[in-house]
Picture 1 (spheres, one colour):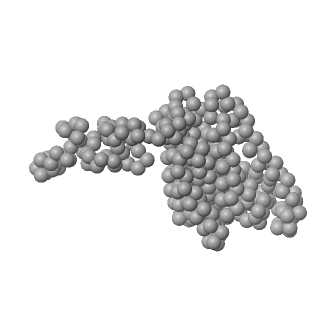
Picture 2 (cartoon, helix red, strand yellow; picture 1 turned 90 degrees about the horizontal axis):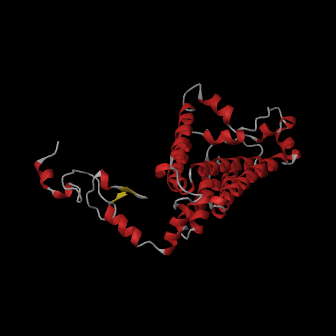
Picture 3 (cartoon, helix red, strand yellow; picture 1 turned 45 degrees about the vertical axis):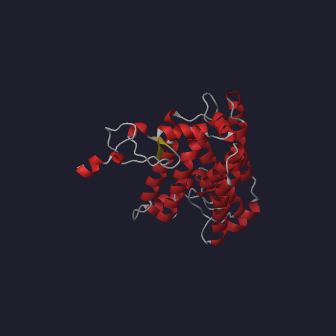
Length: 299
């Protein structure tokens, strides 16, 4: 219920539509704006006047970035509405699986069915069946609620920026192939380790954001610092598969390099072929892991 004091204060109504009550402020000028006047920004919403001023004051690098990544007809154009639908879908699927893992009597079987270990790639050298799909399914299971929450928070934050920039299909490819790269790195560097979690995919997103940001002339110092800190934490804190972090980051950076160099519509086929080549290369790398190493671990 609106009090007389509230109704008498014009600051509690949209400055462009004085008859519309609102509780939302523009994050730039801090004036009240109604839903019609709100434009989603990186943090919060801004009003039409601040949006116009922001566009007017863009640097040449920012204008080039918008032409490259958001212009109509470019290979990187966002999906309808620019909403990060794939990010939301990945969050939903992974969160549902993660919550099911917390159910007594159900969590352990789910984890055992979806985790990844190198032994599942080499049935002739171990007692495990051949289940190569675990290279990807491990991305959707986690070792605990905190593990799940941290990865999903990172996915939500990174997906808000990357998916509208790349488009839904490319973002999904980036996420899954980076996760694949993380599992391959575990198979190469720690074949006796069973791993779960989306960390490889998350590190791929961080590395790709670093490469893409550098390509369009953005300030990438912040993401570089975050990436470095997370790498260090992986080495210092026990129980973390830093190998997955490393593999995901390397593959994510490689994919971002490919995407930034093949963004024109006439390069679409080349882009698809190069992305497929990365997947094939990862498969070949796994296929040629020294059998002696695997035999030693699982003997």
